[in-house]
Amino acid sequence: MTRQAALSTKAIANPEPGSRAVKRGRSASPSPVGSTAEEAAGRRAARSPEYRAQQAERQGFREIAWLIIRYRTEKGLSQEKLAELVGTSHSQISRIESGRHRTNLDTLSRIAHALDLRMVLGFEGTTLSGRAKRDLVAF
Image (cartoon, rainbow, N blue to C red; front, side):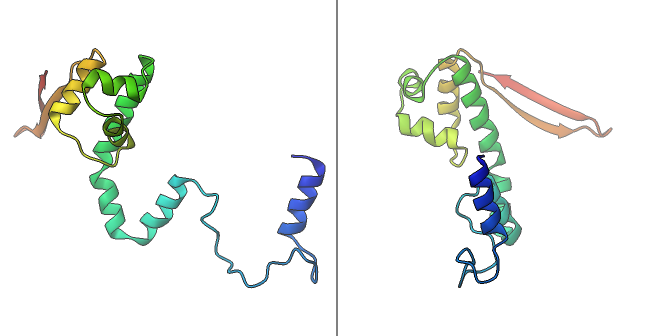
């Protein structure tokens, strides 16, 4: 930041009484403009139990999305190229990678195969002794 920009920022942050930098008619609450999506989601989650429930419900979708993005980029594939290999549209891959939309097992299996991976599906429970038990199937 240049010296002049720093001085301008300081003047706006701490205006002298009567100066033009005083904001008139604005609330003291922070503006959502310029905040990240994560910050905005955090504010919304703090206000809304429904939003928090929806976020928790979609956590698995986001985790799958990050895995697909990671494997796709490791292979050097664009969304368009992956869509071509899977036999679907670019917009479908984009929706899946957004982590906000559910998809079906057939599509996930085709994505896995296009990325030279095997998809593993499983169930997890607890035994009578309290130990975790997992049953997995790869296809």
